[in-house]
Image 1 (cartoon, rainbow, N blue to C red):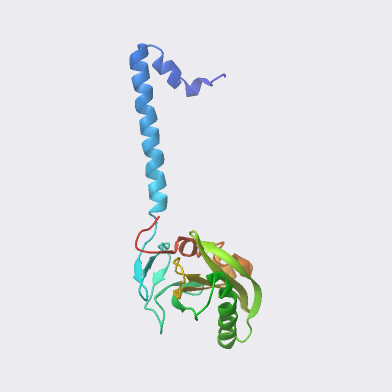
Image 2: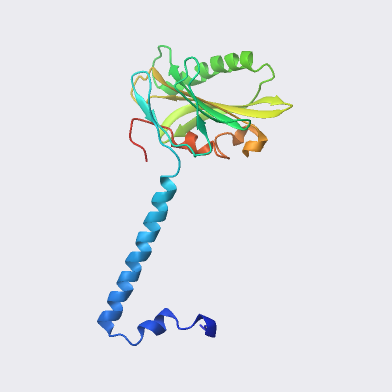
Length: 210
């Protein structure tokens, strides 16, 4: 490989005069420094933002959200709320499931239908877009994506996330709202694109983060 004069001397040329053992030691130090830099960058990315631990009804959960969000006082039965005024919001409420038999996945669509009816009362112009099973940090749940209004354009997503224990009767309801200025172009983008993706995908039961 030809190296331009302005980029000389190369590392190989710098190390050439050294004895083999010294050269190997220098290369080892450079490799360790490079590895330390990679680890530092990775930790900096993971640690970005704020990670609160929130006490739920008999359990705790935690998540991470970017610094652009403002944490505000929960309203009514809410456990947690963050928002960017005029852009998007992320709200967590307690989930209570009725008695059921078998796997929790069988009752979630029924509960989701009831939740959708309640959302239609809250948002008269709501239009369902898609629904189905989901998984957040290995916890099985159920999600509804919908259009809140066409003018102005606003979208939402509701996710039901039961506790990952046999016979779970409680868990989390995650409600997100966003408009195109928040980086979402359709209902399916809520929680999968834009900054809402961070709190949504980082939500987990317990006090330990990733």
